[in-house]
Image 1: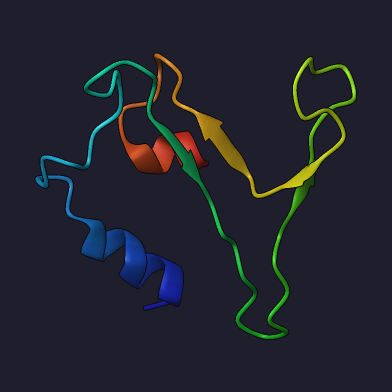
Image 2: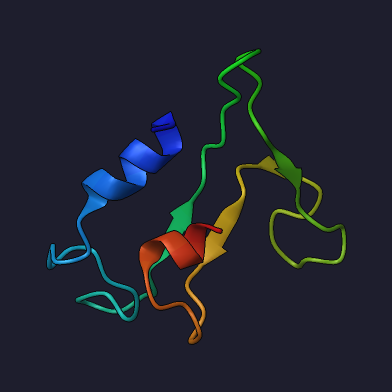
Length: 78
């Protein structure tokens, strides 16, 4: 089993904190994906589009705000 598969299996979808949607007190759920190569210890980063009003052009981890179509926090990160 790969490290990623082991991590996903350990998350446990029955955990009450393992959900997507509105957070208590407002705001939306979000998630990031830290994708690290097992062979070369590389990490995947993205550059935010220059067209964004906030944080345009910044380097970031993949992921972001939960969308209505995301069923789990893993879907959000992906």
